Length: 178
Image (cartoon, rainbow, N blue to C red):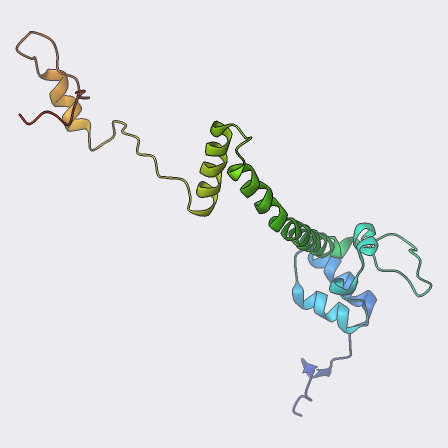
């Protein structure tokens, strides 16, 4: 006999109850968005709809609008993830509200003749670094490519009897045409 739609192993699959889904979440002990969606299908409130107090307590309010019992352990990770996401969104929203005034304060400080020129220069440098980015610094350190140069410099003896060094220092001025 062919299996009916929604049947598993020839048996009709009945809708999962909230308790069954919670037990499955506890048994698996791993993240399962499918199980969380099945929990929502049983009428459990979606995490996106919880208020901040529900998120902080780790459980939704009951029918009377109070908190009874202990928070379910099996969805703690999802509750924590949602709380972190909401907190980050709230922080971003609050910070973006202050950006305009912060930019005006920095502009006023840079343009003010009462502010020390060194402070104005530092503020200007800060703004440029934040917008354009910091200039890349080049650091010369002996590495694999420099081993041959270092090897040769260690063995070279100059005319005056001193050893050569892998780092060459010198001076340059614009007036020299030699």
